[in-house]
Length: 164
Image (cartoon, rainbow, N blue to C red; front, side, top):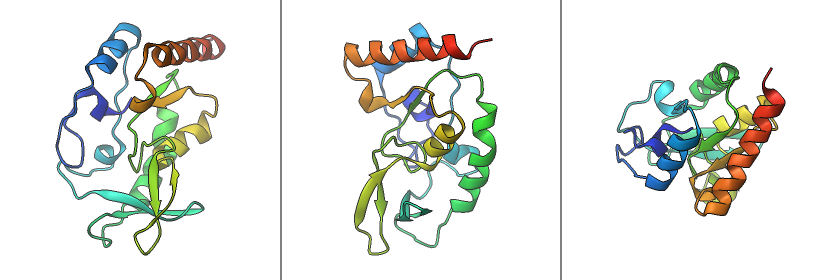
């Protein structure tokens, strides 16, 4: 799952957001593999914020306030390797709106700085390319007990099908 959801200080602004219900749910039901693509490619905390720009078939990850910052290559290299290392997981909880981890909630900007659509983050897409049936959600999809139970059920079914 995304490290920032666990309260790790990995967000671009070095803030820590608490998700006590989510943390409690995770601790009760899962062994956690915590991942932060931005930190794992070497970006510091705090760091300048980045955003997705371009088009759906040619996404660039650039600085929100400084378009000279471009982490596209580093993130694509990371996404070529890291998902394969996560072959033992049975579900993934991502961070909404993140350029790497948002699940259909990440804004894609055009060159004029206007939002053209919402899409998934680069790392989410890499994970789903390798594991298309992997149960995924984000913290916004885990608000009610019904949503928690649904995700848990999906993970258990996936685990049964993918455990040798």
